[in-house]
Image (cartoon, rainbow, N blue to C red; front, side, top):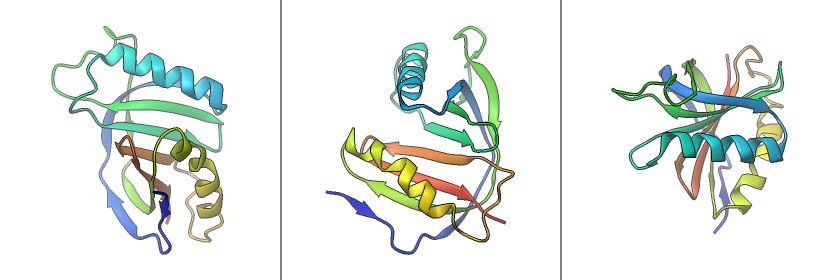
Length: 139
């Protein structure tokens, strides 16, 4: 089943501390960096995952939320944060890998909003394997 929000809601997000790996915005590189992140973290159970794309630099970060006891350096990951703030949210539902192919077109559509904040990156929040929240920063 494939669904797309017809009237994306505005949401407020808190800043999230994460560990991450960074790459370029190319599908093959993104697929590789996700595999590397998942291998470094080990068990995915109970973890929150994010993809963060900065249109200004073309950098993509595969992120996992930091939790007590994590040591980014020991896992060969970077330590950082995802900025909080105001976002418009579009929720994608569907099975992988098809759902992943819909991320870029959805962000392109959302990016036409007049209230878009180009100073902050776009966020993919992987709620579960078949449910992804896309967060576009707005002013």
